[in-house]
Image (cartoon, rainbow, N blue to C red):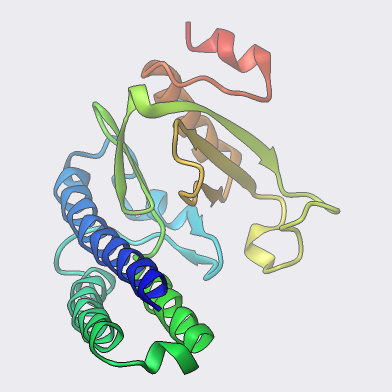
Length: 211
């Protein structure tokens, strides 16, 4: 019982730390996105499609609905997690509700997410609500979404578009791909990344273009 309580306490504290860190990352990303080199106008925003929801990318500011959702959701999640932690420490509820409690914990954590995005900045990028310097980016890869591709047919707008995957060093669990609607916008993104020293993984000839 004591060992289990200690384990759950560590997990809950880790979750609280994750939520707070995620909130600070998002605030920093919102502040930095104002200086984006790309996207800068409505057509460029429309050309970036966010996975899962398959909606076009929206600006990242502190006034957007999705940003306010994360703020309010984080506060609510912190209150709920703190209450659950108190229950774990002061009652024996954990004995009969081990799996239910674990499921509830991960459901709370996973529900507080900002919509995906990509901003290319002078000194780094904002990828899905988190800022990375160019030194943190390993490389990127692109592939066209044609017939037999895993994303083909999910929604009409991604058919024949391009999957852009950005690999970040030492960040295995960070969601890192988006869909770019057309080749012209993909080329613009490639050019900016190459200028910043970020190279393409899948096509060696692409790497020569940035040098």
